[in-house]
Length: 117
Image 1 (spheres, rainbow, N blue to C red):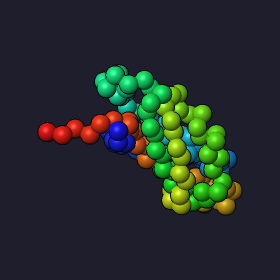
Image 2 (cartoon, rainbow, N blue to C red; image 1 turned 90 degrees about the vertical axis):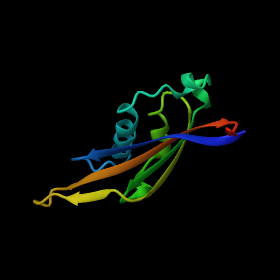
Image 3 (cartoon, rainbow, N blue to C red; image 1 turned 90 degrees about the horizontal axis):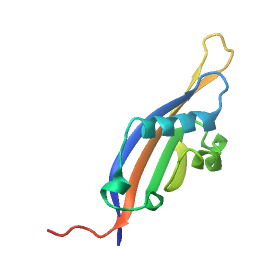
């Protein structure tokens, strides 16, 4: 068996007022997932729990993201989350705070036999 990538999904999330990097990351993941209705598990006759989900989150302060909290976004599958420096922090013009933008890449795979033609 080999881990076979089937889908890439991308999303963006924000924390406009609270500068909450975890919430911005969760919104980016939801943006990636909820814009698609993919029934990959059904199409390949796999249980949904067999989905291997690799997530990469980009934010300016990776250490401020609670990876364990992000696992709760996924209704099924086996998510693995990596957080890297990326995204944007945008200071408000009046100096009253910073808005956070997070980017997410979600890759869905299954452990399956490679196809040989």
